[in-house]
Length: 362
Image (cartoon, rainbow, N blue to C red; front, side):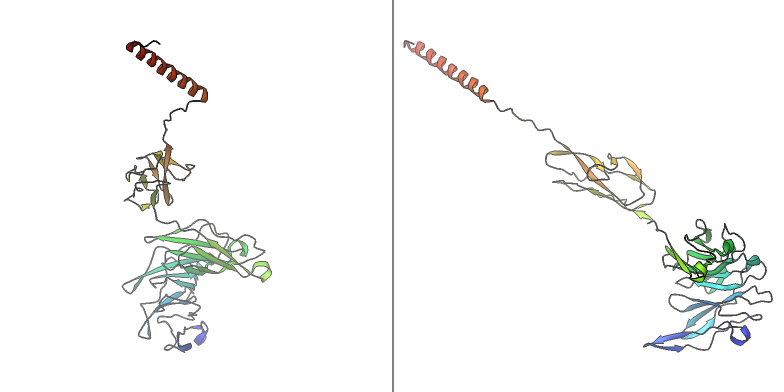
């Protein structure tokens, strides 16, 4: 409730039991507030509901803005540390205009859409041992046109490693969104800004954003599209698996077994050395030739000990070469007649010879 108590602001927590909602404790008002902070202008919760972040974008004498972290223990909410105010802000940053929290509650993003005369920026905070620390410099997306009002809304993946930061005023209110990814403790913009196709007029793309738990699907709202009819744009990216498997297939074998690669799975891009026919695969009437990524031999062929860089799960199929069969020709009828005549003549000669030896007239 950002207007509470002359715009000091506050937040209220409610819990459900048996289908009944009950307020949990008193309203939350962060300590260290300066002026009309508008606490509660934005809020976010961890997955277990035990950590909350509350934004107050006009806190401070110059509306630098701030955010407060609250944690719950045994039904009691307590402010964790001092309010969060990011470094590097320029002018009335409005930090806390938007907030997001990772599932474990250890990473928070705080948006300040008026930083640097409306260019906008986002600040990332991480928690370790109950202490919150700013992680790196403020995030300002590249490719903005004009005062984009970046971080009017923000969203985080469950693991806190992917963030979407909106800029609904970019390019004369067409709007856009920027995606950031974290590796270690370093944040890097991923690709160009996102601008949906088919927008009509001042779409205000980025007036709202959301991100799936795995960070692979984002939705960007544009409430000004088509003269205020509004629309939303969905973006998806395939998350490449970090490892790939190599398996071998006998492909019609009648004996033996396919070899098993003990080094599988492999990291993406790793070098695979093709195995030989170590399982003594056999196929009646055929001899083993090599391996192929397609059972019919139409894929990539690999001889044993060949290598390749793996980029997908791969099955190598045994390829077989037909064994040559020696056959005895069958005589034709004419040839059989000749053979029989020769045998009869031979027998006749033997009879004559026998009669001579016995003195019998031939």
